[in-house]
Amino acid sequence: MLSRTYRPSADLAPYIRRFYVFEASLPDGAVIEDFLLSETAFVRCLLRGDWAAETSPGEWNTAGNIVFFGANSRPLRVRVKGGFAVTGFAVRPSGWHALFEDPHSSLSDKMLPLQQLWGDLADTMMAGVSQASDDDGQLAAMEGALRERIDLLKTSAVDLRMARFEV
Image (cartoon, rainbow, N blue to C red; front, side, top):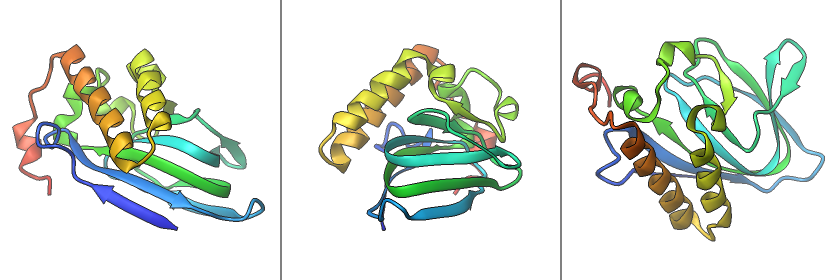
């Protein structure tokens, strides 16, 4: 398994905590089950693999190949079959309103296709990430979409009280 994290560009640092790339070359029959427990929202671009989450006891579902995850108040059980590749980013709570129109409280413990929140821009970002030949290209695609989203919402102000508590 190979995991890499990257800092956002300076102009996106008030909104994005980090970018990450995670790859695992596993046999087709391998199954990994784990839990996600994140105190911040994040987005994952699923580039390869059969990935699902347990959305109710015994019921496994997906949300497409570009997935929004709200912050978790309880662990979310996840499963992947075979090898996989994922890239994505974690959202800073203080920068929430620059990227999302809905209040964060209405999206906690949710797993949704990013298209439900960002429309066609989610597909544009996923296309750029999918076509990239390396980490730099994936980061450029995500950063370009994030800048476009910030420009679209025109609410780029950071919650300064919240930012004082972020590391």
